[in-house]
Image 1 (tube, rainbow, N blue to C red):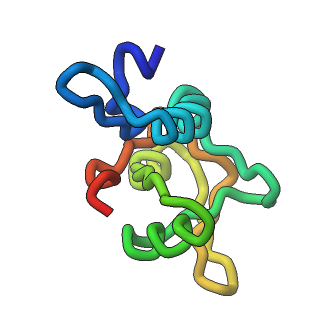
Image 2 (tube, rainbow, N blue to C red; image 1 turned 90 degrees about the horizontal axis):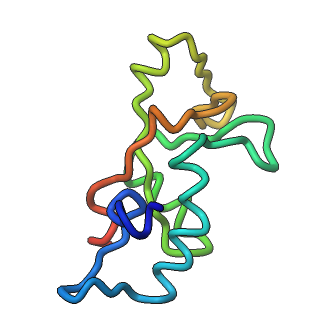
Length: 111
């Protein structure tokens, strides 16, 4: 559904004829579709780890692959009753991030 009707939701850019790079399409669609439709879960951690800024997110996310940055509307999450806290090493943590509070960073394709 996302690839056909809303490829921009997962940071996918189509060319003039409506084609996208195969590797880019596979990576972004497989990893982002469930997140943008549902939520971010802690996976192998106790909590979801959040970066304070874009520079840090790029550094952390780019350790193994080209990162795709998602922005979290933490203010609205907090107003909705979600809790955040900071670990001893300065990482922001929360239990989950529902899709309603997620946005694809608009400059993902510029780095």
